[in-house]
Length: 183
Image (cartoon, one colour):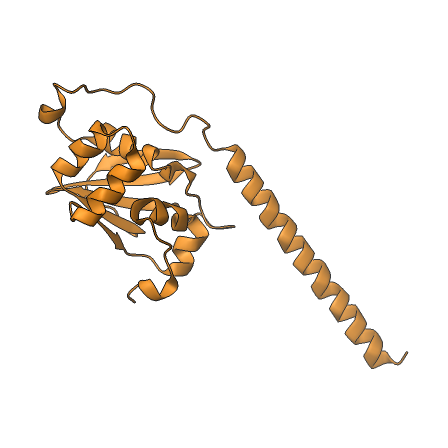
């Protein structure tokens, strides 16, 4: 074997080793991230009943309940990135922002920078959602009726890396494709 062939062989071996190491890091990251997720996704205690529902004020707890019901807590940072999933929710004229950190949804009043998606809901859509026994069908019918609208803000690769594709499917009943996102 000449020197050139040996050099090519050594470089090829190094590249293969680097690829294997990157794959191991990614597998470790995703397994670690999954173990941090809460197993009890939806808060068990409802803080409303049929009589109080019409007078219920939409607050951070209500937004958390909706997002946990849709399993938004399964969103995660992209591999090797500190960029957390961020969702802005607008209920009529009230703004809320939610950030998902290690499977925990933290919601506050107001807008948020670098949001990935915006969810526009009417107060009636929120009441219908809370009153429904099937959260997925409630959100799908709310979207089809126009009471709820999902606005994609981040790029497709960002949404893919953070796990939004399954959340989008829960909202709309269809797969999100790169061509569906306006640049």
